[in-house]
Image (cartoon, rainbow, N blue to C red; front, side):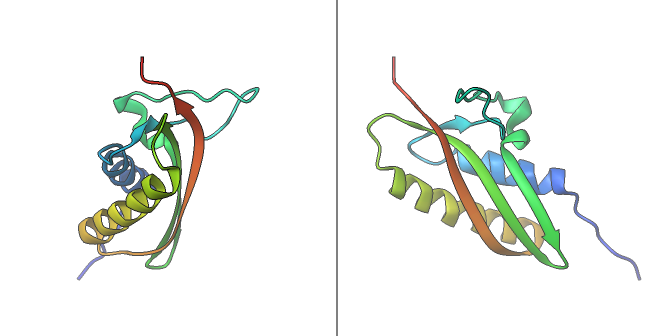
Length: 110
């Protein structure tokens, strides 16, 4: 009867919005480091901190995040992976094959 196509941009937005809701995460970072300096992205650019690769019904995600100082980075990454996987699979019906979490920086609370 037809097909439903979900764009990479939609998946990136779902993943980014879900990720920033996780404890310990300050925000999404730009995918490209320039001179070792990350750029913290605003809400309107949140999808720019996510790379999406779709192969059939499987999705691979790479998230570029900034964490708060003093948090357990491994626990934050684990929480981000679990929540993003659930949200993307639940909202799109696609299977999340792999999620890579790239910590681009640590932000001091001031």
